[in-house]
Length: 252
Ligand SMILES: NC(=O)c1ccc[n+]([C@@H]2O[C@H](COP(=O)([O-])OP(=O)(O)OC[C@H]3O[C@@H](n4cnc5c(N)ncnc54)[C@H](O)[C@@H]3O)[C@@H](O)[C@H]2O)c1
Image (tube, rainbow, N blue to C red; front, side):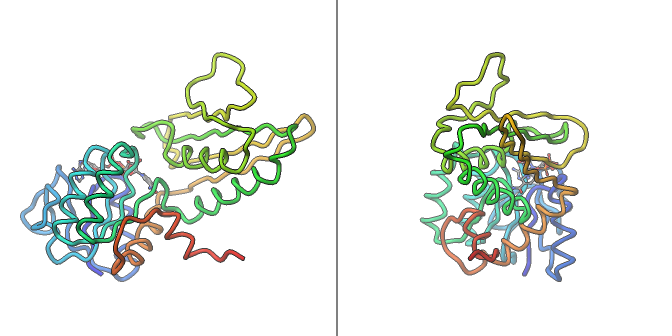
């Protein structure tokens, strides 16, 4: 397949490596900081997408809705890994459905992290009636990350609320008070070069169970995004990364 890499920052460069490793072709690299009149272009438009089967986007939140307009006009499939654009989700859904193209989006394309999210939700469900087990979440990312908490931490918190009814709301701000019984506290730290670490604590007076996903490099996110690109070609509609992963994992 011929891939347009949209956003050529930390993730875009990882995606380029995996695209080539898996025997695909880079059709265009699109980023406002680039334009060589050839493979590099500054803006996502039907012209810059010409000849590409799929776009893989890791850019900035406020770029997503405009870029989706171009994918729809060009009839180009897309994988959107950019986080922090949920305010535009319905607008994006409308454009994708009207155009009949295929787009898959999600806050974490790492297959390992998706396995972790399922394990965490399952662990929450196992202790949902055991009130001695309180539940909390912590995440840490490198100092360059622009959003906080991470999209993955929010997905994790939603999954835990769904599997543990005694937790009814998520608190992501710094707590300078005692948490309420029905609150799930999600804390974030930013610093250094950490590609992304998420931990769920199931903590009782007698013991603690910690489930951690620690990304070692960004390669895992990029590999998942390239696999998602292989999967989305030929499909129509807006899909979540969870829908894609469900087909990839063996669940019995
Ligand atoms: N879903 C996942 O698995 C996953 C994993 C890692 C990072 N992310 C997200 O991916 C995004 C990018 O992360 P990063 O670390 O590569 O950031 P980065 O800052 O290193 O790179 C972003 C790039 O996007 C470019 N850009 C800005 N506006 C653009 C536009 N309109 N069109 C195309 N490109 C544009 C910037 O010039 C920059 O080169 C963030 O939202 C981050 O949270 C998602």
